[in-house]
Length: 490
Figure (cartoon, one colour):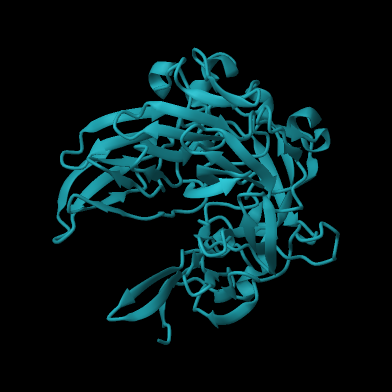
């Protein structure tokens, strides 16, 4: 598996707990007894397929994706009947329209300043030959559902291989936001954020559904903070692109998103393809970890702000030729990461080496309200409360509470291990609680998990990627798995 043996959560519905296992088996358990009701093989591990996603129950179906983009897996979203486990529909990220469930005349995308039909075989014509069959675009993240529109939303991941020279074209529909009919899987609209991805900027981050006023008009919006460093706001009913702005000012691979075409304007200096194979493209921001990875954002209707757990890293990226072999890594690039070294609020060098930040962002305008620096990437999800407080965790193991309007730190507590879990809050017997699971792991913590982190601050470790950037993490936290619960005073 790529990037540690992680699991992103369970789903509940129809009296069952749905567990997506790493070997791609989707299992339904009786919620009261734990007894296995049914299970289904969602993919073929012999082809490099795994699964780390959190399924979602929508009406009579449970939806799940697939992982393995670094093994040449072709991504899809599948729906299974909650009672029987029978496949209801499956929509691929790339391939002929019959596979993607795209209708050439009714499925739309954002082009020329308006929503436009995608046309016939919109995916295949953007790939060379049969490359789409091993094209990536996996769906290992999160899924959202609007019951009034009956649409499911999610993002597809990076194209395979990481070497862009070997896959000319836009590589649709990797790196895209999708809206599918929940009953049939038919695609209502699709928007590609990073055409012909050259940096492993996965597009799977969560999609948040919020009704808000943008440019003087109320919209049912979908908000997505992509690894590429841009925050996107679209009308979730039509697919109209409303806002696309950087939420980390160190982002340099593109100057901006052209709002007419919807395409990022790539800076030649940071194009890994233009610099060529076996050439180290230096100083690309963000790193492949992204300005934000899979850690979910939170939203406060009181402030109208989104709270983003983020990374603050750049990278050197070198693509090389690679051959596809079923079940074997199909990456084709090496990279090293380093701190961005720029103040996120001013964009000016400040000499610090913060690897992370926690940012408040207005998705109606694309403006950063405030941002707090963190020594390491903020790898936990956050939660915003009606008390005007936002909670998040740090890789050193601190649970922090900050003021939702200003970002001022109000409280912090050192848990036994680094936090990559998502903070939660609930009420019981009239008292409010906040809980978080601490236990280091994932990409940022893989050095400790694999025993490679010596505790020495050696951020120039060649070939170790994230491990090199996080060498000193072992000095601050250890492996572990502890659920810590806090009671809030009445």
